[in-house]
Length: 436
Image (cartoon, rainbow, N blue to C red; front, side, top):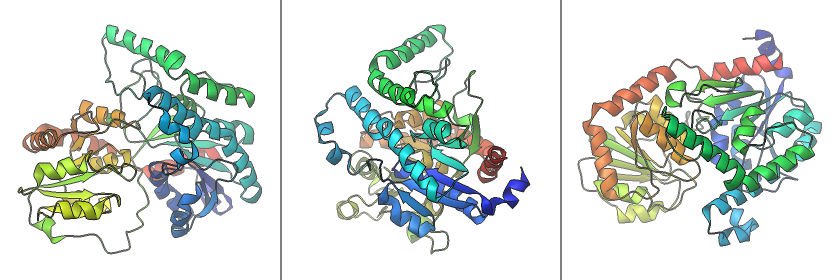
């Protein structure tokens, strides 16, 4: 590592720039706080709805100004026509264009203004922040992108990212995957591809006309993928700017506070944790069927709701073997868990791996099918490949994991590789290399 950069860190400024979503912001907070502790001056550009979070963290926050402030809570209010779109492909194109692609020039304009006040030396983004190519080419500063989802780079060895299809060495399958990539780029996602192509061309940025996630990866100076090779598909054509960094985790705001504890975790030999994350508020998809599957059993079920319908669920499921909370720090509960039931949020999966907890995954939308596909492919759990599993399906899957050593062995194997990575120091090394 270039120690001269760290010695001079007090004169170095880094701007984090992220999409206005918890899953895009939280995984980067641990790195940001560590950089701040090393003397780097840190600021963050994202939606105003996160101002309280950054105030708590002590990070200077620049909210969107020119950029339209679109987030999960207001997207239908800003675009009422979105609710009328019934076709899934049409809606995906609409979201790519309006929530991500069209914001790129606005992000650039905001960040140009920020630079007058906060003269940053580098920008660190989440992997869906569409300002990446414009910032790199127009502001001439190094840009690092953090892969907060499974690697989305296009490859000749794989089906298109987002399909959830598994790798194959069969020539016939590979030809089908090639045709699918062509169909996605030339027909299905053509509107989104054309929209980004127009913006990049208008800004004189040389690029290959392809899917948005692939462009953002290729235009980053470095793309730091959360995770390890043993939890990712093999590619013969992986980009030269891609590095694995292991389990880069969110900053734990609760580490100096009393740790969550419930005496019941000492009374059960088998404990399940179920969560749907923060955004998904339809508890009938996963939390309710999991509670139904194991209520009044000898298995303790802990459900975290993200604040969605917590009291209703407590009243509906008063059984002594059920605990329902708005939120529990995963590092407090994961060491006690035998099976993790989840809709496939990537940070939760990484936490499960580092705690050697096999997984039941039930998620399809927002790229969660890709997470679930990897869980099934690498046998570190069971992929139900649905948004709405039944209580019977969940019960059978949990019981299978508990009665079969395969899943535990496989997740331990991935954990062993992940333990070899020091994510914070790897990030420091790559940051130092680019700042030379």
